[in-house]
Length: 68
Image (tube, rainbow, N blue to C red; front, side, top):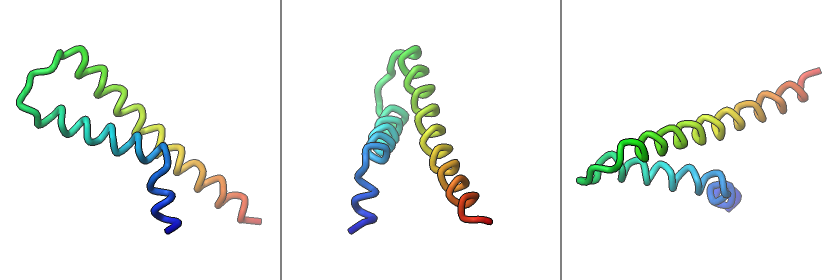
């Protein structure tokens, strides 16, 4: 149950929504505006990088605090 609650936090929802939108954008039979597509790809990359880097930094901080 705890894992399900962690899965449904805002960070995960944003990541899943952005990933779904990226997949739809890449495989949809439409031709989106190139500027909008570039902006979305940049935002997607920044959000994914921030979330995964933040998680790794938090783990490193907790590991450093545990060591004497």
